[in-house]
Amino acid sequence: MSWSDQKDLSVAERIARMYLTIGVVKLNVEQPYTWSSGWKSPIYCDGRIALSYPQVRTYIKHELAEVIRKRFQGTEAIAGVATAGIAQGALVADALDLPFLYVRPKPKTHGMANLVEGEVIAGQKVVLIEDLVSTGGSSAKAAAALDLSGMEVNGLISIFTYGFDQARELFAKAEIPFYSLCNYDVLVKEALEQELISNASLVSLRSWRTSPDTWQGH
Image (cartoon, rainbow, N blue to C red; front, side, top):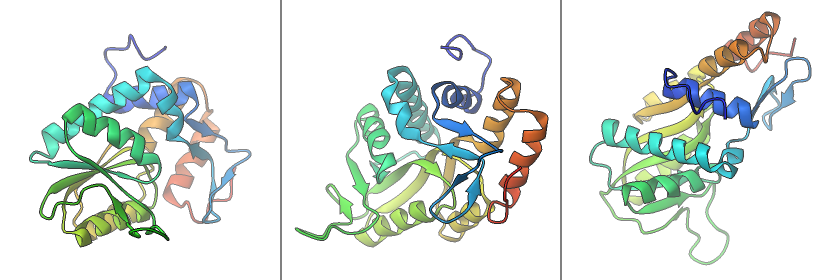
């Protein structure tokens, strides 16, 4: 694959190239996608596709684990944000030989009605793994659920983020340390270098990044 022999790429650049190559990310200014919120978007990201590529998912696993070792020392457990963060979170927990949990978007409607699945140990330091951060709402909600369960959220790591101010402000207010392996700006730059988008599309893509709630397309 095109990224495997590029030793001079940063982690963010390598993941951006991976995502573009295998189709995790699709860019279309002319025919934008519609999010559940109603927002029009020139980008669609489905990180689950990366799980079908062993080389990609292994690289991501190792980089997530490395961030935890360097930035979130003392971590005692890993938690995935359902649903996309579950698989990669479990891989990271295995790589670090740590317990794994995951957080549902809402409690089960039967049985124990759990919101957090796995063994919850009060006071245990946990890092949340998220596949994609957009507005940050689901991630902040998952962190709040872990807090309520008695665990201590050591930090949140995503594989990719759009870098919206809304998410940064939300995490800052909740005092959740946040780090992402890759981001929208790096990905768009890579797309331009790979000639996957034009300079005209670049202007529109950057416009969406600034005002996603009002952007209406090219």
